[in-house]
Image (cartoon, rainbow, N blue to C red):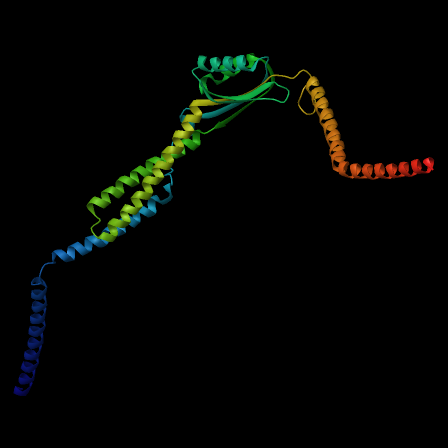
Amino acid sequence: MKKKLVIISGMLFLVMFVFSACKEKGEVEKNQKENLPPATENQLTEESDLKAPTEMRKMTVQTTGGQVNPEEKIDATKVPRMVIKNGEIKIEIDNYDESEKKVVEIAGKFNGYLASSNSLLSASGKKQGTIVLKIPSDKFDAALMELKQAGKVMSDKVTSRDITEEYIDLEARLKNQKEFEQRLLKLLTEKATRLSDIIEVEQKLASVRQTIETIEGKMKYLKGQADFSTITINLFEPSMIETSSGGGFFYEIGQSIKKGLKGFTVITGGIITVIISLLPVVIFILLIVWIVIRIIRKKTAKKQNK
C-alpha cells in the first residue's frame, strides 16, 4: 500500500513540474514581444517609398491612352450640332476685277472675310482666278445664294461633315487628361520621395501635358472650321470662241500666223546659212573659171595675129 502511494505521489509531482515549465516558457515569450523596440524612422520612410511608385503605376494603368470613361461620356444628341460646311461655285463673269470686288463686299455683308485670292491672265487675254471666303456657318446658305447672283453659275457643290461626336470625345479626353495631371502633381508633392520616383512622375507629367496641348489644338481647329464655313469661288471671263486649246478664234488665227512666220524665218535663215557656208568654195571655183577663160582668150588672140 505504501509503495502504491509513493508511485502516485511521484507521478503527481512530475505532472506539476511539466505544467510549471510550460507556463514559465509562455510568460518569457510574452515578455520578449512586449519589450521589442519601436520601428525606426528610416524603416517607416522606406515603407512609404515603396507605396509611392505602386500608386503611380496604378494611376498610369488607369489613365494611359486617354480612354474615356463610358459613364462620363456626354450624349451627343443632347448638345448643339457642330457641322463643317464647304461650298464651291464656278461663275462666268464679264469683268473679273469688278466681280471680285463684289464678291468680297458680299462676304463682308454676312460678317465674313476674304481668306485667299489668286488670279491669272489666260492665253486668250482673259482673266480668271479663285477666291476663298470664310462665312459664319449660320449665314452660309444666305451668303451662297447671293454669291450666285454675281454672274452665270456654271457649276456649284456643297458638302458638310458632322463633327459633334468627335468634338465631344475630345472634350472627354481632355477632362480625363487634366484630372490625371492633377493626380500626378499631387503624387509628386506628397508621396514621391526617392529621386527615381520623382523623375518618373515628371516624365509622365510632361507626356500628359503634351497630350493636353494636342487635344486643345485639335478642338480649336474643329471649332474654327464649324464656326466659319468655307466658300470657294472660281471666276472666269469667257473667250469669244473657245477651242480645244482654251483660246479664242482670233487668238488661234494669230497663233497660226506666228507659226507661219516662224517657219518662214527658219527656212530663210537656213538658206542664208548654206550660202554663207558655200561662198568660199563658189569664189574659188569662179576664180579658176576666170583664169581658164583668160588663158583661152590670150591663145585665141595670138593665133589671130599670126
